[in-house]
Each structure stands twice: as C-alpha cells, then as structure tokens.
Amino acid sequence: MSLKGKVALVTGGSRGIGRAITLRLARDGADVIINYFRKRETAEATAKEAAALGVTAHTIKANVGDPEKVGAMFKEVEEKFGRLDIFINNAASGVARSAMELDVKGWDWTMDINAKAFLMCAQRAAPLMKNGGKMVTISSLGSRMVLPVYTSVGVSKAALEALTRYLAVELAPKGICVNGVSGGAVESDALRMYTKDMPARNWNVSTPAGRMVRGEDIANLVAFLCNDESNMIRGQVIVIDGGMSLTQVMPGGA
Image 1 (cartoon, one colour):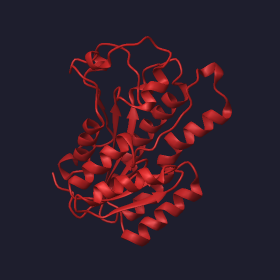
Image 2 (tube, helix red, strand yellow):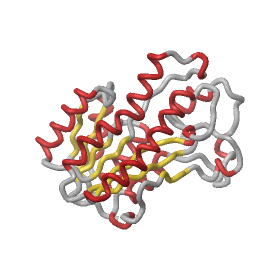
Image 3 (tube, one colour):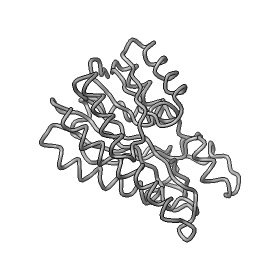
C-alpha cells in the first residue's frame, strides 16, 4: 500500500495507538500532522521519527473538545498544506467512574473529547478533502460491552460509532469514506486505569490469537482503510481484538 503524496491528520497522534498510526502512515508515504494536547516533547519526538521516514511531519497543539481550538487547528492545516486527504479521529479521554458516581463535569468532558470532537473535526476536515478522502475513527469494545467504571467512555464510543455511520452516508457523495476501528485490550495506561480493580489476569493468553492487540495491529488496519483498496468499505466499525470478544467480556481502550 502507498499513501505517497497524501496529507494525514492524526488527533492524539503523538503517543500510544496514535503514535503507531502516525508512524505507519508516514512509513506508507503520507505527510503527517500530529495533534497533541499536553506533551509537546512527546509530539516533537514522534514528528522527528516520522520525518526520518522521508515525509513532512508537523505538530499542532489543540484540545479537540474545544470548538475554537478545533477551528484554529484546521485553519493551520489549510494554511500549511492547502488540503487534507486523511483524518484519523484518535484522541480520547474519560473518567473511571461507575454510572452512579459519574458527575456532569466528567460526563461532559468525556463526551466532548470522544464524540463531539469527531463531529466538529469532520465538519472542518471535509471541505479540505477536495478530491475525496478517508476518515477513520478509533473506538473500543466498551461501546457495547460493560465494564464497572467505563460508563462515560463506553457511551461516548457508542455515540462515536453511530456518528461514523451517519457521516459515512452523508459524506459519500463528496468521495469521502468514513469507517471506524474498534480495538480490543491494548497494553496501555488506559487499560491499567480501567481494570485496576478487576482481578489480575494474563491478557496475552486470553485471546484466541494468543496475545494482546498491539498499537501496530490497529495502525495496520487503519492504514488499509486509508488506502484506495478499501473504497467499498463504508460506515463499518471493524473489530480487531484477537478474537477475545468471541469468548468473553473484555476491557476496551480509552
């Protein structure tokens, strides 16, 4: 697969799954724009790795839950690149509380970052996709499976998946493909936060595949969905979990 000459924006693209996606798209030839919120040094380090692959790498600090910051981010994208071919909605956040302990502040924060942000970003990204494009959202199995303290994130991911389907239909006439990827348990700080009160277990042997999903696994699927060979896949949320959800309840990533 080749994405040479494409311009890609990855929200939350400096670390974790986002970093893996950024580097995979860069490896396939795409110029990458790395959105981050807090850790500038981490974003710059990821940009340096991407640039070493022979592409242009640019960083933009923005809270994607803030409409003004989203607007400024896409204005910068347009000014520096003139267009956008790929948009990866990866940035995520949330509070680890049960439904009965969840307050309005935690609910609003999670919904803003995980669901509303995609709508705001898609509205800005679509006009920059002048010759069509690809949008991919990153969800988790928590959208349909229940964890004790995953309420706000799980509901926000369910909303994100629904929005993925609606935008897939609405943006199709513009030549824009919209799909989602639902990841299984990925070793990360998020997994540890949402499962810290659960019994210890070896996730590597809890999947039919014999190991946990890695960020690179998700990045490989995202790269395929960004390629022209996936053009007939529309509005789908593809599960990548090593088969874990076929046999048991499992934790999702944030």
